[in-house]
Length: 94
Image (tube, rainbow, N blue to C red; front, side, top):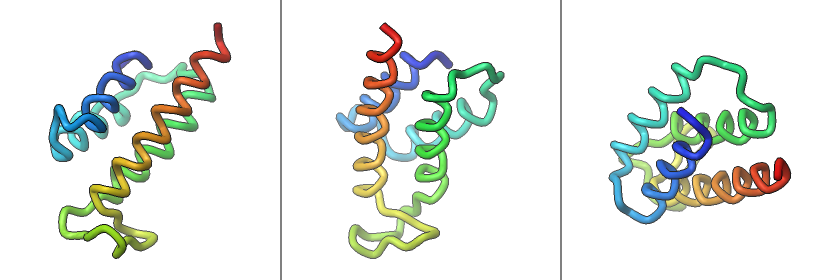
């Protein structure tokens, strides 16, 4: 998946165009099967987001997050921050 495709996926999740389940499934599959060769700037951001997506738990309520599980609200916050960082990384390349 290209960086632009990751950005679209994240944007659609943040905007509520896709469910948390769809985002989680598509992101985890895409990142796990990434062929490699990704620039370190992008990899670092997406790897951090991967950890958050992997920690998402449907039953975790906002404010009840722990080191091992996060709520949907927290996942959206992290996704938003990741998108901002990806955009900065993209801008730095130009």
